[in-house]
Length: 378
Ligand code: GLN
Image 1 (cartoon, rainbow, N blue to C red):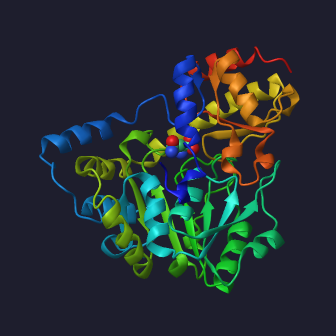
Image 2 (tube, rainbow, N blue to C red):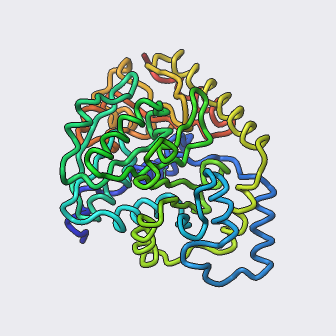
């Protein structure tokens, strides 16, 4: 039995594809997790924190040292006590924000393709989603279409930049356009910035840093992508005091508090110097180029993503009916797992020619995947 508000969403595509990847022994370019480990100093810090006896509940909003480190990543305005809440990955930040700030009957604007959690959490909050499509090949939005999605009932718009799965990094003009609509319709912007350090072209602009936006922006991020530690499930929300009240109102009853020793280690991670982030980006740029160049050579329609560790490629040259059929063939016959992006669209047809590959993998994994993809007939 599944509650009616959730039954339409089935099993998340990430769990489904991960299961099939294991079952078929496929090289897994599906779910976005690195097949390499996070920094040794951070792992050591976690072991140290366990040894030091941090074995009990953390404070509900998070360990103070981690909240200070998170505040330090923003401008001086962020107060660790009043504005920062630590969550169980960004995945818990999403329902904390939506359940804590959105009422049944409110509307929430989502850009599609959207990360599947957003859609399900809007439903759990009893809110109504309004969709705006980012279309290939640029994956930008139409201002008129966006305006049409806002109404007097709009409570929030969800903005994910850098964007999963398209790899788009939203420009200042795009973010300003969204911001103007938030002001006009008195809505908040809920920004998922978990790929903030993975930008190869352009720059990551925080919506909250745009003039006049501080009081209406909630920023969510996490440790997972930046430190190759997706399994640690440490995330956070930065929001003005008034909005933090709502976030914590939900967070306290979802998880109450997050894994204590990992929070201590996360504070160490956030203290790492620029060299770490530069190396991370350089490594991912090389992986992006390796995979994208190979996909292009094999006959996929591909543009290098400006950010994230995903590439959304066009598979229509291979003659499959849709993304689900293509990904099934890939896993079962080619031995490579990828994500069928129609899972991220309300209008499934918009995603049918696309396939999402993750390149957060060791070079040898990517080379093996590319070798197998050579079995495809273009
Ligand atoms: N963010 C990851 C991705 O897009 C998936 C996380 C999850 O499995 N829920 O691949």
